[in-house]
Amino acid sequence: MGGRMELAGRLSERVTIEHWQESRDAAGLSDGAWVVDGVVPAHVALDAAVNGDAVMGDAERTVARLRVTLRAPQRLGVTSRLWWRGERLTVLGVVRDPEQPDRLVARCRSAG
Image (cartoon, rainbow, N blue to C red; front, side):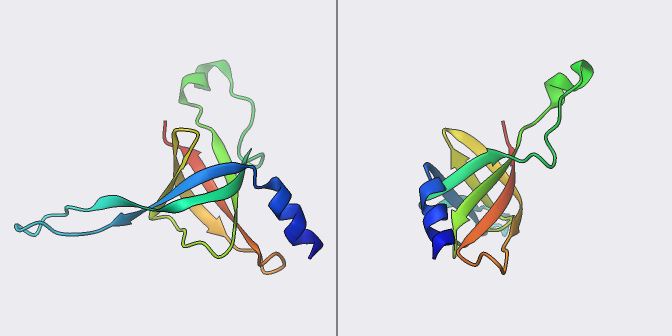
C-alpha cells in the first residue's frame, strides 16, 4: 500500500491519451483519425537512460526522450500518443512491471 500512496503523490501532471482509430473511405483508402481516450494524472520525467549531453553538431537534432508514469490499467501502446503541456509525445514502448502492478511506464519521444 505504501507504493500506491507514493505513486499518487507523484502524479502531479496531466496527460491526454489518444488512440489511432483506423477506418476506410468509400474508395477503400485509409481515413483514420486520432480519438481522445481521456485525460489522466501522470508523472513525466526525462528518460536518463537515453538523454545525454548533446554535442554542438547534434544540438539541432536532439529530441527529448521522456518517461511517463501512469496509474494502471490504461489502454496504452505504440498506436497511442500523448499530449503533455501542449506537446505531442510519440509512444515508443510501454512497460508494465509485475512488481509494481499499480503503474505502467511509457517511454516517449517529443514529436516537436
